[in-house]
Image 1 (spheres, helix red, strand yellow):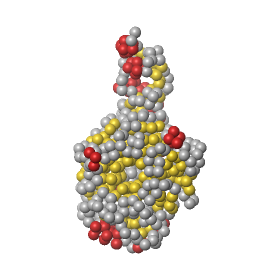
Image 2 (tube, rainbow, N blue to C red):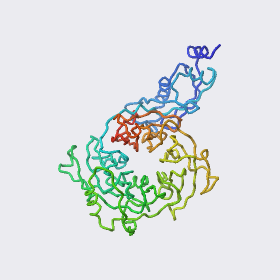
Image 3 (spheres, rainbow, N blue to C red):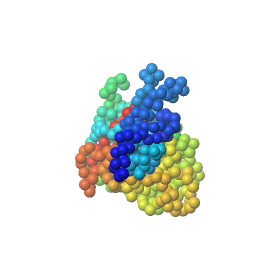
Image 4 (tube, helix red, strand yellow):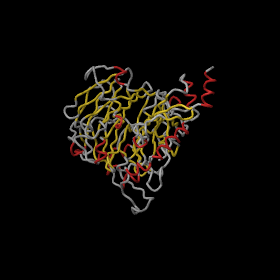
Length: 510
């Protein structure tokens, strides 16, 4: 009998034994063998899981562990699921077809890992800029309901040197002007403050002070601030472009910075540690260097006035300089665990290395990992204990920093030791990674191939590809994407060479 004949016989008459497993305790069912028709696809298997979950609903109510969107009075709410086979691929065919492809019979036992399904993230809106959109940041959920961030929860940075705060309706509530060159990164530090980084070698701390001409109960209120009144401090010390900035998770959760809660990564080969409370930083005493030439359309006069309005004491120096990389540093982040957030940091560089730093002393390198390609971006998947690392080789590495380091602090442990998994799909270098607020395993990445991709860390290929809806092309015929962020309140936000800040839905049903 041929394989096709065998598949046809399986699909029409047989049942197969399956075992359903999940890493999400909210949706766990008893891990016992089940017999199901081999004709089932994802939808049918999802119905099986939901039936099992529905049967256990009363037990979950008693334990006060209801599923998302589920209430005691409404009963069980159906949740769609995806299924992963043992080779890390999403099941998109019937069980019969899967068995045939693997050369298995209906007498086999199949283990399927199920996970909450993600619908295709749909396009919602685009906000136009006069130049490339190089940085995006959504106000964290922990602060998004406060006065300033609620009115303008999306911050974007552009190559015109201006930071814009956007309302959910798509209007600019604030324009922050002080940088002399392209913005490379922007991050919220609290509900009413931001930090930005630029090619002009400086970071700016912004204190947002809304001024409204309508009452606070008016939903159409638009707050305006002047650049001069909003700059809290200029952070100086880098000698080349500042490529990336990150904020310690503990600061966003508590609002109280520890020794230092901001990291900056620069093309001067260093990472520097700062505080969002500028009063704890040393005064910057070095002579001011000539500012970088600005190739943008914004007013240079406004920038000079904004910077000149600050007292000299508001120019501050870093708390700590981390120097061990031998090429531009592309990203640096704090350890995601609250107990280590202000004592351990990670950085990646075009020198092919991932470095782990001790922030408690002089900033020593604890571990150095080396690959065969430049590393371009970095994010933590905290609940998995993994780092997601983007590369110029177009793929994303998943690395467990707790793994041993045979080579020591200065050694070369090789690609295999660095990579717990390799996710492929992008066709140009990866520029940014943003974890999903819905699932510990899901994250988004942006790339110079002009797309944002949505990934599940358990699968080797991307779940969805989000193209640029503008249709505009940049240099080389591709509208490359510089940055991406993801929050429940907004969705997936990205900015690119098409001069657009694009918003897509999250794709989760509840």
